[in-house]
Image 1: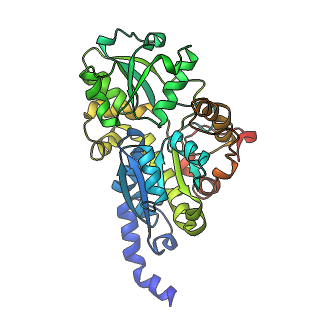
Image 2: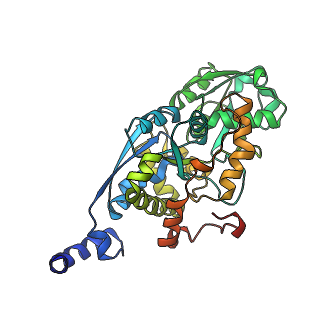
Image 3: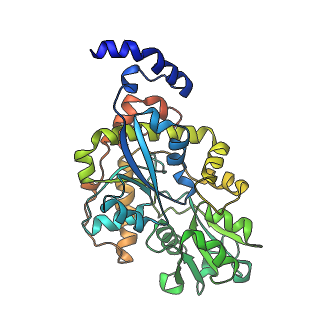
Length: 353
């Protein structure tokens, strides 16, 4: 019966596959479509999710994908825990803080990062206004200044790391809680002296605020703040097939992004408002799009991110991250679709899961 149905549908399905530019076998196309809801935010490095929708990559892998937009990571965590989405793409700080509070969060991949090293904050910058008097590379001059940032996010973790590396205490600055989309306006109107921001907001500030200065970009050796792909323990148990398909589809979308930065920026423009295309084209290149997990993931968190958050009383000491990191879905993608990882640098054998 199934064979007969496949014979009747074969030409039509092959035509659809050709139109979509895919060479997936017929069995994949014959699978039932599985829904998946993806929590995302107004950030440049969330582009792979938008690409997956607009380029039909999720559909190609048998997923009916819906993107649920948020302003920041803490809001997104609440949505995930309340069943509003199945996976989140977001920063590390809300994930780590949530695990510390006993939330059933599971890291299944990286939104962006570098599986070959234990430090990462490539998508963050500190930008200061001309009125602040702060110059490029002069982090110490931030002492006594008001710095706007979304509290409890990766931007705060980055700021803490950069300040610490330069001998500036957190007590020496005033932190002002701002939504990412409000940071540029606040800097322009001198409501704050500087902002700690991820992309595209850091690049937008440099472009739109007269004589604004990028004080520092990335370069934090004490930071480990890759983007995360998060789900919950219940989703891992009950929705594994959707997560496997998602991992493969996301890997394909990320590779497409790495190969088409300018077109990816154009796609981002339809999801992230308030940013000019020329800025988006610059901003999208400031992240490293590598979803792989490695032993550097846990070691980077344990040696850098966790001590920083414990010192800032955002986490309790002694948290075991082992149970909150599950590489099975990324490993499945690497095994079944190695072509989507072929342009990434290899992970050392002793660093692989």
